[in-house]
Image (tube, rainbow, N blue to C red; front, side):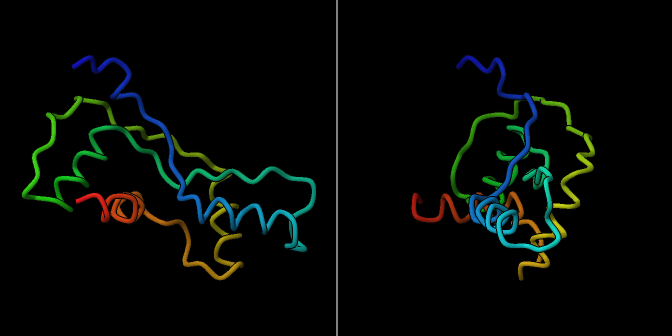
Length: 107
């Protein structure tokens, strides 16, 4: 299996969080001429594998990619999280919850 690029970090956000931020950008009175960054949290292949192993311990998964942890601090994400809270959410949907929702019907 060619794993080039599998350890590269990126960010994730659940589509429902992203959609609510689009709504906030249109209707929230405190949003004026600004970009809203939907970056819930950093993620890489090893983190996804760890969550899958936790959720589905009887299943087998490939070995880790040995990726380095992404320690980026995306400052504008805090503004987006505050908007999610003002729109009635508790903040970002976690990576674990996102993976669970997207895989529960597959197993």
